[in-house]
Length: 315
Image 1 (cartoon, rainbow, N blue to C red):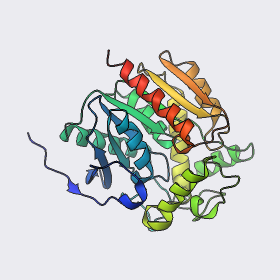
Image 2 (tube, rainbow, N blue to C red):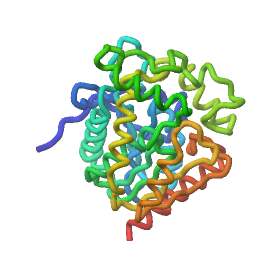
Image 3 (cartoon, rainbow, N blue to C red):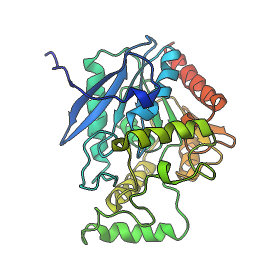
Image 4 (cartoon, one colour):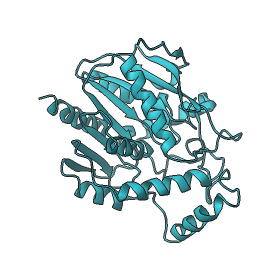
């Protein structure tokens, strides 16, 4: 049966620096309306581009261009609770989800739209940070992708020694005490890109890419997101623990990680990739959390490595 066309959605081209030909749409994912954007361009296959927490489609405009330039089509997503997708709480700046299983509904809606658009196969994955957590769960439940590339995947959350026991206690009492919809300790309504200086930031060492990311949330404030809720942190910790207990999928994979990483926990990444029979850990000296938002040489290395892996799976 023919699927109905999705409703057009806005795309802020002025801040995205994206390739031409974007198709942005609204789709329903369970109870949430989410936004998708696609570029039906290259015929080598289609990359499912999975952003991290706080991020929006526009942030990956340049990344889409890098992939299109290498012969791939691209589809990417505003996860529920961020970008222009539905947000669960009255405070739009608070990132919240009740359970990470909800993101799998978003991922399924993304795949359904890729199928509706008849985007070229094989399908591949590039997943950053929280998107790496969502994407790994997707692979474990049989997501139809031929290969995956991770960028600083959130398979654990970086915490100080005092934060770990506090997070465990807060997570255990938050739901019964009705605290899930409050900001997690040490976070709040400040948007990192608009309040943190470039010097000493934990995202990128490249000033031009920092300005690119910052300009998006300054010029289009509705794209911005601030700190996570206690409920989001609890759900994230539970999902990371659940994934750690499962074996690596059989999908070929490369995982890029900067040696200056400060946002996600690095030990779970090393442990996961050490046990991934068809996986490789690719370290980037001096790079921070945003491998795809670092300088030109780092970005070229990342996208060349991704393209090489994807093309190798085509036979």
